[in-house]
Length: 115
Image (cartoon, rainbow, N blue to C red):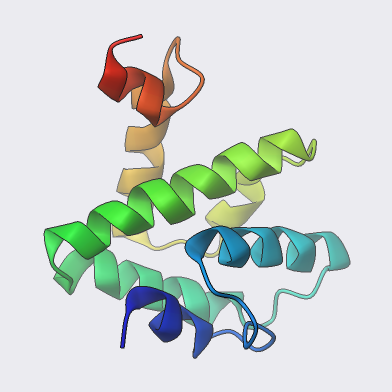
C-alpha cells in the first residue's frame, strides 16, 4: 500500500482522493467546516511515518503534505497554525524546519533551486 492509500484509510471521507494534494485540500475543507474529529488519528499516523518510514516517504510527507498544507492554507486566507493543534513533536520539527527554509522564499522549491 502506498502512502496516499495509507493516509486515505485513516481519515473518513478520503475514499475518492488520489494524491497528497487532494488530501491537503480535503484537510483544509474539513477545518473550514469545523469537522476535525478524526484529525488526531490522521496526524498521529503522519507522525509515525516521519519517525519510522524510509527517507523518501518522510520527504514526501514534509514537502507534499506539510508544505502544501501551509501553502494552500495561506492561499485561502486561513492561518495554517490551526493544524498545530494536531501535529506531534516530530511533525512539529518538520513544520518549523519548513518555516526556516522559507525565510525570504515563496516555497521550499525556491530554496532548493537557489532562487
